[in-house]
Image (cartoon, rainbow, N blue to C red; front, side, top):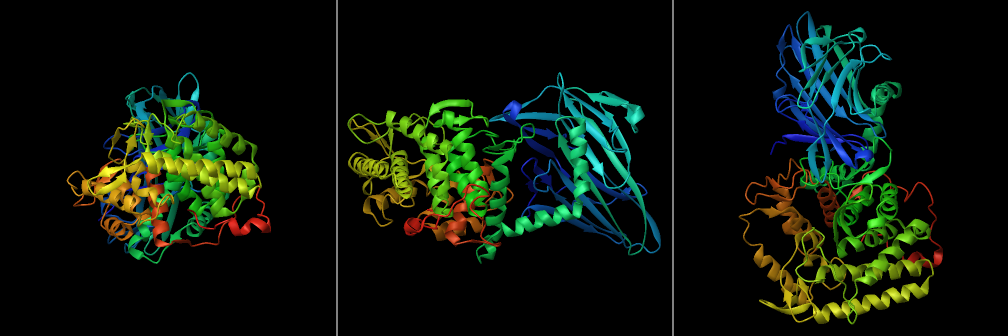
Length: 635
């Protein structure tokens, strides 16, 4: 099925809405630490934030006919051709740069000479503050031409002072017009014209055009470098920086990075699902803040997702992190450092802002354990034990353990929670899945302490893990419709509830190694869960499909993914059981990572490029005597 919307971006800027029908970028997004949020800049319903146009004497080329392709599963390109002209265009965001580049290449097919009008136009009306929910920001936008670089339009958002700006730097001198709905008769065409302003609800529009004369067979290329900054100068110079590095050189560098970080499995039908979601999860679940240049990890960078730019330990560490680790271990270490430094102060609180401040209070046992599980996955995958000596990590592990022990029942080795990992109130204090995750993390800690020769702590954690498993089997196994099965939760007073939560499903117990796949209690639990899922009238849960990839439903899950359109190829919360189209949970970046990790694991996918180094700093190889206990697989 045809993709209607593409996404691309880099650490600084996200372009979540590149729309096929008009070839326009409808919004751009970046993280602003001052606001503890993502900020999204949008046009109107009928006018994109930025879109190209090509024409002859006022007659425009119909770009809605364009054929689209996603180069390296991340760079949107389109081409269109008629009897007069051939057009090829590419949108890409080079790594490490504050902005993106849009190229247009035209080739004349007309007999003789013809003049071609080429350019871009756009509209900025709405500005959204996105931190869990999205709300309009108040402030004025000012449009002018740069005094430093001739012919470079820049639009700046101001409150009491400038807060951020966008500059449009063309590779060739172009005619420029900027106008505001507040002053529709006034057009800014030169530095001497000053600036125009737009208040809340008013659009500010900008246009850049150039006439190019071509003979048959001649080609011409234009590049528009779009720079972000905290005010006019930083935005303009960010755009100019693209020119200094060379637009084609930056494209080559980005292409090389994407090729080397692609996953290949030999399953052509699933290659697109795997790599599109891998790159989407990589770029849209982490970012560098435009004002502090700090790394942040977040649920999503598009306001189309219901919970944008918030932080959850569970989704960040167990969904996004494994996918990042799968293709870029060095970056995975930075993500861990962010979790154990910036976010550790409120670890276990269900949802936080990107700077670690509490967003939604409430304790989640699953969220508390998630960083330890991610830490163990990193050490197993990279054999980099140096992170175990990091004082921030050690302090974080100690804090997690202190909180964990405060949740332990006084007589039984079960641990209580208030919230499930998905944010819902737990029906009973002692949730089976959460306590299995505790068991897994205690075993992980025991293993990691053994690696660094802290044998006392290793034995302590192993002993407690054994007690937890015994308690789960004693108190969390009950009679069900198909025989003895795991309860969803218990209160240790004889009451229990059967059920399951897709985000933290009992289906994953075998994946955590708590039981074998053929364990009778586990099999009865799966049969009970799947008897509830037989009715697909309300749609298919993508998270449930992913859980199946990690358990015993690999073939079924792969078949479902082959027929699912998802959210234009991106993981979402649920899809229609018949059409495979998205129902809810659009632009779900952490779920995209979870899907890419699980699918890559199920298919045995490998990186296209050479195996990357575990980290760009602090790495030390493990001593020979412990290498046999370092397992290479991420499990």
